[in-house]
Length: 115
Image (cartoon, rainbow, N blue to C red):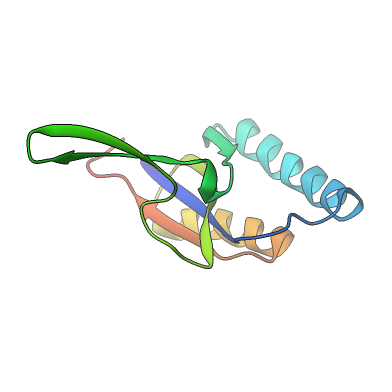
């Protein structure tokens, strides 16, 4: 079994209204229940928009923290799901379920090493 991060790529800007999000969130909860039942779910959570981030860097010998994203863009990682599945094909199938429900791109990235 291998660990994969499924990164949900969202556009920067307004969040859809509650009446739209309600049905999407219900379907996402169903996917999570399925993954938990098959013991493939490890962790998942949504992230705030980029302006809520803080970047910590080493500059010369000083560690500094600055507000905002490390890079500007029209899209951001809006959520992360960690799953443990047999292989990349299985991870892609899970990501496809999320993409169908949300209409958002999903980046599938393996963790280094074996789970």
